[in-house]
Length: 452
Image 1 (cartoon, rainbow, N blue to C red):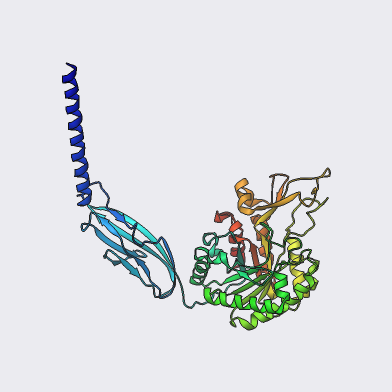
Image 2: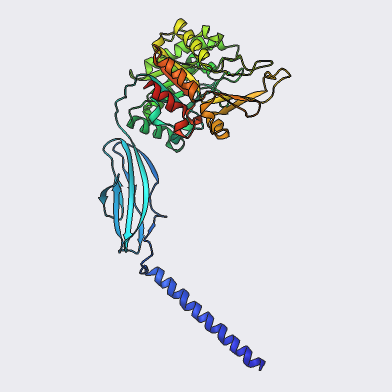
């Protein structure tokens, strides 16, 4: 009995093995022969060995190629290539050569049995030439070294300054950030499509969030003080602007905070901007970003610049041992800072006044409720402030840590209202990637809508 049962078990196992083998073979044969799809099966698109980029950045006249693509069921699908929803081809491959700058949406649609599969790509084309838009007032947004193209609110700026150009003491220009993932090309393309200039920001070492000088930093200064290094830096800037088609340069002159060479550095800053003006195209924009502290007396003649971005925030009164807590970027301080530059350095028509997209956060207070020391505070981006308190856009202080003071929408609108009726050229914000993602709470949106 046991032998018969074992034989029956072996027969059953053999039958299952044979059936499984036949099923696998049938499946493999079906796959190899491209099966007939059922009524609810979507067609398939394969480009593992082909080319279907999700995003392409081109110069006008270059070609985006989509090829090496296969479809299933082979030979039985209806193919449609669309550019901005207009059908351009029904071939298995597609080449797109735009004749004008712009943003183009490429869509591949594959239909079978009434069911459609799609793939999408965006082609951003840098125009060969463009016309700059005219605005009532400047609203310049700085993109920090950590920012990306998606951070720029193009509808709410007139200019963009991209923090790509770190200058070292040996005169070398590090533009790694701008080259990564074609970020500089993307910014220039998107800006020029809209008629907006994009500038290269030159800087030394900056402190986090507030983007100003580290104490005793002296990186850009030695490069400017050495005539040979300065000439080399001018040449590097010129070449980079030619390559990327950027529209000019902003010099963020921060290398003086505690540096014993700050006076000499500021003196040669005048030579640097003159040499830039001589080397760059006549329509190139040249600006500097400067402070309003006592060091302003040391700035040289800045006639060659188009305007000065005055860092009219952080009054210096509210930080340090025993300093009273409070709003460091008030409307009154902005007026004072702007007036310093208009009265002593350049015409008001060359003054662009800054507003912060960050707040001053107190982390430790002394027994009197004042700032406990130089390490007792830090900074918080505006978008982080909004994340901590969704209603923060309506205020200028939130109760995080020992208190965070910042510019909310009401305060920046007051500042913009003042600038709108003044002779000043406009406003800039540090920095645009710190702004609220929600445009209804955006500082840049409110400033732009007030000024333009």
